[in-house]
Image 1 (tube, protein in one colour):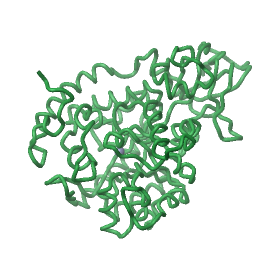
Image 2: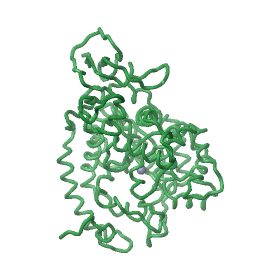
Image 3: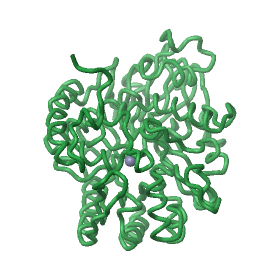
Image 4: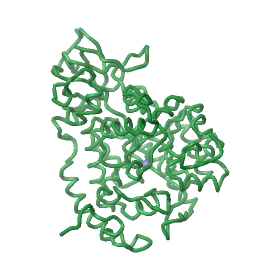
Length: 477
Ligand SMILES: [Zn+2]
């Protein structure tokens, strides 16, 4: 078995297992064998079959993205960037999301585009929350990424016939069937020859799943020791839908069923009982999340587009909630997402001290790893997977270099990333994805989007042309 050594790295973001935190380690070396890290430190004198020059580089753990929809979101670019239903508290979920869905032919290109963009921004592990589609496992295998496959299932579909009420078409038997299929897909993922796929249980949304489906899926996740994620507290409409049905807030209802736990992940957990837009009579939801060890998957971009924000990341963290970060939508750029997490947290709390870059990087690494029930990713330490990113600290936008992590998040972004490695294998080098045809897939999406645009008016309740639903930035002359 060959050992690879990164020699003389200017800097390694190393994991201090005693203090349970990342630290800056200068002039350091990282060694790995068979996809697993064997050494992080100074003065390595073990075997070295292959050497990578670390001069001018910062070696950091690959980022962990716990909430993403690669099979659908890339299609929305240019369509739903600036729209939210005025009659549904500016959410885009009920009126617009269903009418711009990628068709079967476009799905593989969507996946390749999203995963390529994630790799380019330093993500090595992603949770792919999608409806099951043909060839899914092999597509994920091809990407070279570590993927938590998260097949979504539900008992109801939502739709609006007027832009201000949401109707649910229930089919509990179909929900049960697709849950069973999700479990068998997860089993097949775990046996995939790539060895990099694992699974998560995802009843899609709190308002589309029956109580039985929620309870059964959680029981099964517990039995199989898998993480369990659900979209909840993601719109004002959904908040009040659940209060009307159950008398509880969305978070309160999950708690009443004992579905909040260390294996539970709430995407997106914004509309708690004390969020100013919900005006509820209690203030318990944040404590419920913290007390049960539940993770919140925070994805600010897709909400910020519609003027919606969590109140606030720093407050959740200080209360003791485990926080993870996801990109949810394009640009599928985790470093851009982190920068937005930080600025929104500070503007929402009106406090520059509310969120540090330490909290931020933790959420994108160990916070996410904890949520995915993995202690071998999101950190660089012996025994962990060799999932790492090499950042050029000599890039002009990384200088001055007093605090390289801040230079990366607040200035250079993905421009300073030189290579990305999963299980020690290079998947990105010099701004190029090595495993997938990113450019080809992106060109294919351009064609596919024309079909979606032509079809959308038939799906829209008011049969509006797309230019009326989503007016372009400028008039096309
Ligand atoms: Zn989502």
